[in-house]
Amino acid sequence: MEPVDDTQHTVRLALGAAVLAAERFRADAPNSDAFLVAVGLLQQTRAGARRLGRRVIKPCARYRDRLSRVMADARLRGNDTVAAGRADATTLIDHLRMRPR
Image (cartoon, rainbow, N blue to C red):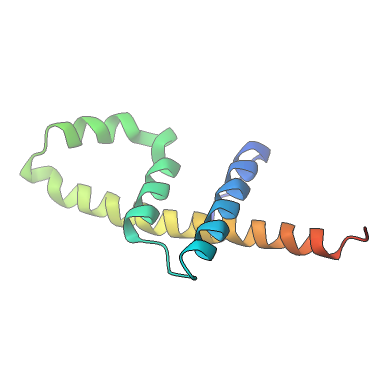
């Protein structure tokens, strides 16, 4: 996982809290591949969403393999980000539970 600044950490923490809430509603069902890919793609937005968008808008056989690799990478990044956000949110909740009232 890449180092994150305060803003990115806050966003990741919010994502983790949302994932924890969703898991409660879905009885601990795992996150879907589509959700993980979406999170991963959002992570990659800063680095190349415009370039990727141009390639997706004009699909071409020569880009098919590249797009498949990008989607697989996005799924892995999304999974890592969701796991880190979930861990951050769990740590925060545990910390808040341990605080004296």
